[in-house]
Length: 244
Image 1: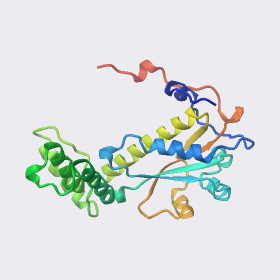
Image 2: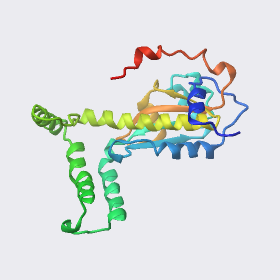
Image 3: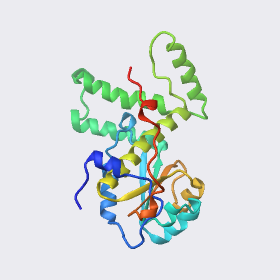
Image 4: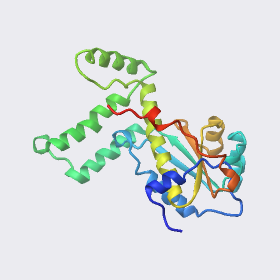
């Protein structure tokens, strides 16, 4: 089976609710698609996500009721749980700083650092901690008030509260999930993103850390004809497109 082009994959992808039990999918191909998902755009390259690839049939069977017994979960060959890890912002910032060492060299005196290096190290060493750090929401509101005052006089980034950074993490995780689904479509595999689940019980079943938030659960398999519930409907493009 030849891989599809991007346009072909976009048009092929549908939210499939019923998978063929007689057509298993290759775990290594799903893993490859997840590797491609990890190349999705991510805010500040923080990569505050994790992908839990479930191939164990018993776990999938236990997951189905937690997804409210949706057909997409009950008939899935495999599942992927996309989660956000905003709690790992310190670790991810340090990883970016370590990457700076490989790019620019380690322990360069500030007087010898190029402007790009200074900006990058200040960004991950100072700005990211300032943006992500919070304590019971108090510091976030102080930052919000401060930035709002500065914003009266010049353009400034305003999404600095804990709830704002949570949204940022979920947005970028959603980009990874979409990249995964398109990669799967390019392989001729089918998926269905499921938001409907008991996320607390999912975390407990999988033994996920406290700081994890479930972004979405994506079921995987090969579609049965009845697995696509009708023709694709979209609002006319002219109603959602605006050229300025």
